[in-house]
Image (cartoon, rainbow, N blue to C red):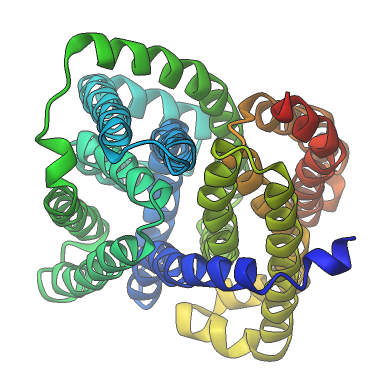
Length: 445
């Protein structure tokens, strides 16, 4: 049956039509981190790279805890698009679509300003918990202070991207993200090499680039944004929006807790080890965001098919998107196996960091195969708006696998940490795969 589904040319074509722009735009997202790493990695002092590695991971830990603004918006917009594509007029769909977007933008702005006001306390707590070496903490604190000024902008961008992805307007996301990251790279070069702002310059560049992205996204969504809804409509959608996103918030919080914990362990050893882990983590994010192209395309396709009541099509999309995710993971593994030396030398010229990376190279090579399934299945579950099982998979992977293994394998040093992280990735996928039949049945009912 699955072999027959894989022959569905229309689904293959739609998947690639949506996934390719998302893959290109998603690859551009971690390029922001890779550009930062490459520029700072060639400075003579590795403290600046270590400070941005720590600061960026902590900033992402906090801000991506609110990534439900993207995921929840995508799921609800896509399902509404599918529901109203079967015989109903366009006007009711616009009303629901606009109301969901307004709910997302209002919540994003509110949460962003709360983060801005609470940032001094947050920064102090995070740096205390990470217990980084003394010469890194002041630079990381400066980076975080600058980045938190634009927290509302970052969260509003999440909501706007979710809106475009949910509608299947992936070419707009491509234009937004690629242009934003090109601008970020140019500003990085200017602020670091010409204005000698070092790690602070990287933070300023990121802020200006994100503001540019928000203004352009508002222009593309202006028709929906500036057509206001009555309060009753907003109330109705806001309740459903919060119900879904409460589970997604827990899921994303513990996902990012794992990433931040991973980086903090490296920070307690040395600046060189933190820098090496930062490079590998940026490459992981680069790879995962490329593989996420199929996941994000699946969010839109599964959401629309589910909204339209076509459960057979949902299963076909799952099979086909899983096939292409695996193929891309194999391709990335081959590329890393053949060209890892050249890739790493582009990102840093520091001998001590390169020696550490050489010890960790096999973890890098097999990262795509370890992680592809959980990225792919996240897309399926978001399309189904099945946030509860996404939350459960993370809790299982963190508290049953990652933390116990990291504790028991401390004698393995950094290799024990990476082993625990691989178990975390694979454990998430196994949980979601085992729960998928029951989730599909529950969704169907």
